[in-house]
Image (tube, one colour):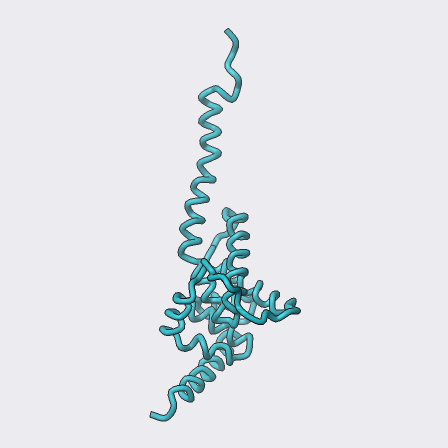
Length: 184
């Protein structure tokens, strides 16, 4: 009778299962993160002036990078917002062609009704497009729950600069909303 192959031994089988388990855990963790974060990230990018198509593409690319480096990411939510925000800035700087229309097919990442719902509850989304890019970026981070200190860390800015942009952005948004609503 011959000795069993090394891969057939119980110890080897357990080792193989132990190696597979972290991938299963990683996949489950990432799947939960993806489901919670994807729509928020698309809306976050739209709040910074991206079109639905741009926001969906950048979000998908960000999620691919997140999955690839999942175990090395300490704060996934902040990481995803930072990577997506920077990708949007790079996209704007590199953009050569301007699309003439939205893609004809519906985007499965974020349906139009989701956007309409988000905008209906946040009139401020329209006003954000009127802000200078840095104020728009800082306001978008604020709307999505980041503190000025967190924003400063993520965008490599001084906290005072973030606060100044927030102040100017809030004043501009307040004026825009007052003008939109008209005299009361």
